[in-house]
Length: 200
Image (cartoon, rainbow, N blue to C red; front, side, top):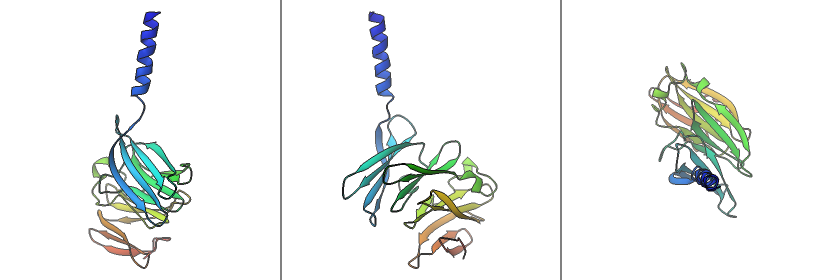
């Protein structure tokens, strides 16, 4: 009887200690247009992280446990729109997870390794200075490969790929111009692309 109670106590302690819990913050983005905040927080006992969403007006919020985050402090791997938020993660390959802001429903999971020129190589995965950028409707994912780098445009509302474009070298900057075109700077080019088609 005592042995049984002791064993049960150990089981309860293990279950409690294994519960995911938030740790140190990694990054935060304020979507000022849609009045919400997204934070990425380390999970205290693993290499996983939490994606935390909060409505700045009502205080409504949710959180989702995600695999290892592909960004870092100051190198964002999140894009936002009125209805969705995307986060870049890496398990055995790079993936993009897209969640509905209303209720955290997962809208899509996109494998990005197939877009990496020459194939995805974990050793080359962080050559570019940018991971993710966004224009309020779409996310733009930078994925380094063995022979070049790709920019992959994501329709956040559908959680689906719109287009992708390859560059010969790492990407140093992705920014949204006042005319809403996407300006991409790589080692040998600076291009202005249509956000819907990817054309110059």
